[in-house]
Image (cartoon, rainbow, N blue to C red; front, side, top):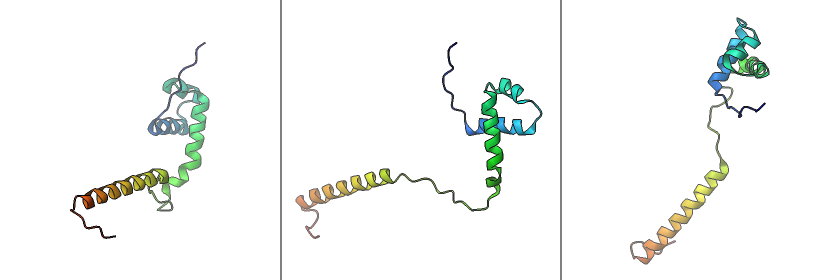
Amino acid sequence: MSRRPRRNHSPTFKSKVALAAVKGDQTITELAQKFDVHPNQITQWKTQLLEQASTVFDQGATSKEPSVDIKTLHAKIGQLTLENDFLEGALTKAGLLSAKK
């Protein structure tokens, strides 16, 4: 018996399956066959949905700021500083920029 390759499901798909499980119109086994997902996975998604449902109605408690990768920003700052220093030196040698600092 060969194993199926690992699948990554979208959050939309997970929520659709979890909501169907919460409704209770069909059994977990029926949902597993319908969506081609293991029953244990449906149970996990349902549990996650129920545990995190209260956070949907939080009003501004958590800011929706994008996560920032500090290392990437520092690398970009270093690159731009290096480019500015190079251009300043080139312009000074060309006589287009005075050598004030």
